[in-house]
Length: 517
Image 1 (spheres, rainbow, N blue to C red):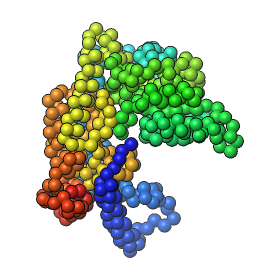
Image 2 (cartoon, helix red, strand yellow; image 1 turned 120 degrees about the vertical axis):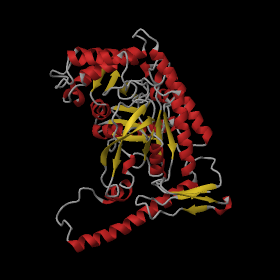
Image 3 (tube, one colour; image 1 turned 90 degrees about the vertical axis):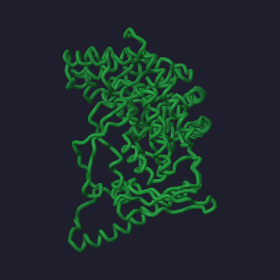
């Protein structure tokens, strides 16, 4: 769990409070002017209600240029970011013809398969000529090709399960398959930081859902014991089925699942284990087989193994692997298999080829080199960030590295200044994270060279100095405009405590920021 320093929490709450107060003030006058101009649409229901509408208009729109930046190249180690402009204070953004060539630290291109590959690309092109860009059908009608059958056999062998089922969308693998695995009368116990696809799948299943503290095996056991003792709500009958759902690498934290402890507890209480390896399969482990291989867990002890092909394999879609009986059942019940268009043949061929490269079946050792490089890059970059004083979440070997920003003003400041220095990063804020836990999420790739990482570290270090987000911060503080246009330097004494920055009148997107001594 993330422990927020009291002073950081106070300053962050204060910044949000100021934004809320000024936003309400502006809304008050907007309503008056709308009434005066006769713009009120009486009788029409609002599309968005309450705080969601307020947050979108008064907080998100200020910084929406930091999210969803379009690109015009493959998401390789370096990427072309399309520049956008706004003439209405960020309410709308228009693409321009200008692009910035940036070092890419935002894509899930863990093994570097997103760009053209000497082994994969020719085979993908051949598959498009032999089959088509799309099957134009579901798996149960005319959408199953020999490539789909080969892919499922390849995936099952790779993850160490008897059978596998592939879908055309990674998100739907969780959200559509979970309701087929468990329903009313069942109990789902989910990690508190599981992905939204798991949350929606659990809600749609009709099962009772309980949550345990993130990655805390002792609390999981407590929740299991309590709910087994109580039974189903109202009737207190025994649960028909109990399923514990965890992730291999948590995408917003970069942490590895404590799988050995969780598996031991599930064995003790006869609960099924559902493991989401979206970010871990292909990226960690000696041969890329994910968190089970890295932590020494027998795949036979994990009942359902889920993963996606969008990260390490440079393709799209997802898979579910398990026993032959479970997979056969899902083929007759899962909406993602029965009603959705099957994964495209070129995408299927890309996955097959990538797995062959990872396993060395292409006749080279490039797969082993990629796995060694992503591990080396991840551990080097994490170590260097920590030496600089940044608060970095996650575990060693994980290619996901969140840098904590906390204060709302630091989100656009970090993102815009990095882009200005040709570094493409992803910043994450509420509602994707809790309100106080805004962060920049760094994703490393095997395609990054040591020179790339040193350049990125220099940029992050300079930006970190600017927005005062190092853990071992000096007494020299700066009031930072969120648009990174004006920096006013101050030398403050530590005993002076908290100081409030002032907004720049020249900058319409400026956010008031509190700095810490």
